[in-house]
Amino acid sequence: MSTLAVISAGLGQPSSTRLLADRLAAATSAALGGDAAVETIELRDHAHAMVDATLTGFPSGTFRAAVETVADADGLIAVTPVYSTSYSGLFKTFFDVLERDALDGTPVLLGATGGTERHSLAIDYAMRPLFAYLRAAVVPTAVYAASEDWGGADRLADRVNRAAGELAALMSARPAPAKPDPYDDPVPFEDLLTGRS
Image (cartoon, rainbow, N blue to C red; front, side, top):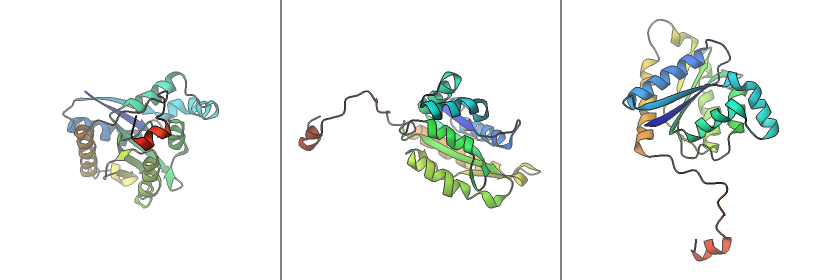
């Protein structure tokens, strides 16, 4: 069974960010044939622990469990509200705490919410570079939901289903590469030159 971690960086309760995260998770699970263990992490619940972890360098308690859930997942959905044309500070703090190689090769679907469609480019100029730095495998389609997307006709359905299908396909196509063990002895430089390992 695939494991799918979902990050929601919404501050309100309820929040449109969590609503979008839930819709993306449900669509991805359906695209995987219902064969996915989904775990949603509300970053607002870990705000104090995240600040502590940035100061100490070590996540602890339930926040440590959240970090491990994301690092061990077969796929990740990451959704943030857009503030000042970028992701929220809460969202960035979480990914600052992760080990740099924690998301190596992990399939990721990006989502964001905001007041108007004018901020939709925040996904491309702020979120994608962050996940490129983390060496994650970000799916081509991202989902931005503005306030008007929640009223009346379901304007989000096609985008949600397309993005979820891409994430499910990537999760099914190949397992994420094994994460290196930080305690393994590195290969001596001389052996790299001679081809021995």
